[in-house]
Length: 422
Ligand code: ASP
Image (cartoon, rainbow, N blue to C red; front, side, top):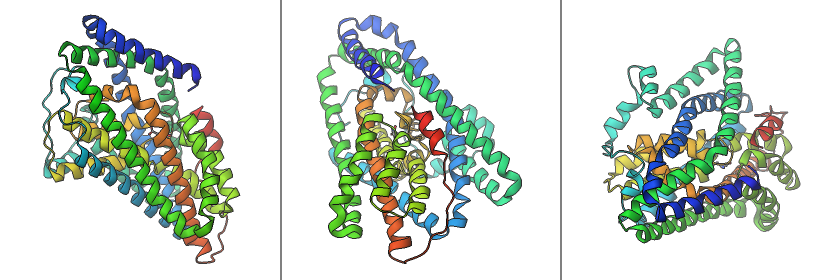
């Protein structure tokens, strides 16, 4: 995504806002363009999530060979993504930025739907439908996620003869990522239509200013969450590196800036690998942990998915019990781990979290105008998380235990991934 795209998006935001305020009826008539954009996102979401999860989990099969390195990495990733989601949910519950915002902002792009929150037992039942194809046809994503997890574990236990299947899914994943990159070129059109019609709806009801205030509060709360996520990980760096922690931050600043500029953790991977080298982290550890973490440790993205979904629920006036929030917690973790580290990769898996909370996918419209800039910040947090993860595993596996590490397989084909993200 180049500069031209950035300006096109800015232009579509300006035109959408102006159109929504001054030509509300026309903007509402153009709503179908935005619906088309969301349909395309949904079209790719299912196959992408399936192939990305199978690709990522089957590669964990190799971690058996890696022993403690693989286990430390997975433990760190689960902890970091979970903390991110918890921080986000707590902040949203405290500041409630969505309370008082007009639900029309979400419902404008969709006929009003039945939006009731699921209780925990019904949530669990939706995870295990009797027919997986029927679930896919109804766009129920969580059963697909569980199915992919079990499918991947089966591939790993079958072993050698399942290798072609695993390769096939890795290839499919690359193809779907490519399709998403193409789809992102349509963002300005989708944004113009979705934003314009939502603003038209709000301005027809004279509730525009109220909406802007709520959105700004949401952004401030989310950024605070990202800062807290960086902070607790910085505490780990302080513990591991002691006085050298400033050097760590200095070296990490280069990949983080790259993350900010590219909005892509995958594109930032080569720069992160260089930083790891300069930090004198064990080369083999870095070559395994960084690509692996870049693929599944998207903590900033997971936090974004959780806070956005809760924000929408607040706008829609849905009362969320603690068990429903646990549902959001679990799906956001899976969504953060299943998201792809490309610009706006999180938007695709966001659909899954929205569906599981019974929020209409048209709610995405509220985020689109800000998503480009928020994406840059959450990508920085994702990259920072991967570097701290590598330093932690390096500390636990080598520095602390003085273990000699044999050559480890590189998890992903870095060259291909970078090329894809460009
Ligand atoms: N752009 C993010 C990344 O590359 C993914 C996302 O949150 O959209 O890490």
